[in-house]
Length: 172
Image (cartoon, rainbow, N blue to C red; front, top):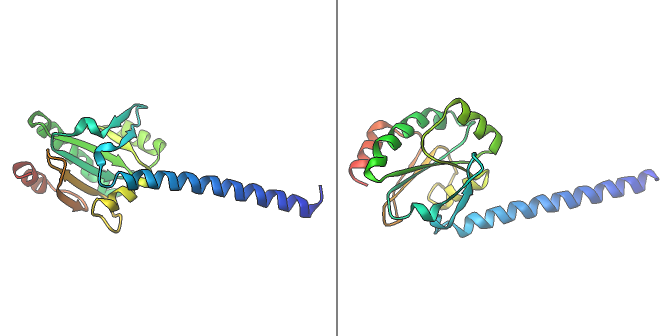
C-alpha cells in the first residue's frame, strides 16, 4: 500500500471514530437535557452494576449531591453526607450521590471510603444535569434538595456544612 493511500485510510478511520464518539456524547447530552425538568425520569447505573430509577425516589425529600473522586471538597463532605443520610433516613429523607466521574475511579474510591447512601454514575453528562438544575458553571460539589413534591427547595455550590444540613432538615 502506498504511503498516501495509507494516510487516507488512517484519516478515514480516525474520522469515523471521532464521529462515533461525538454521536455517543450527543446522545448522553440529550438524555440529560431531556431529564432537566424531570430528574424523576432518570435511570442511572450504580457502581454495583445495578441501576437506580429516580421515579422510585419520588414522594420523599431527596438530597442529590454531585461529586467526583478528583474533587477534594467533594471527598471531604462525603462523611458528612453519610452521617446525614443515617440520621435523616428514618425521617423519610433520601440521599443520592451523583458521580460526574467514570466507573473505575468511583468503584475504587468507594472500596476505600464506603458510604451508606446510593451512588450513581453519570460521567461528564452529570455536569450537564447540574447546570440544568441551577449550577451554571458546573462547579463541584453541588447539592440540590428536592422536596417531597419533587420541586427544588434548596441548592448549594461548594462544600456543605453540618449547620446547613441541620437547617435544611429542620426547614426543607
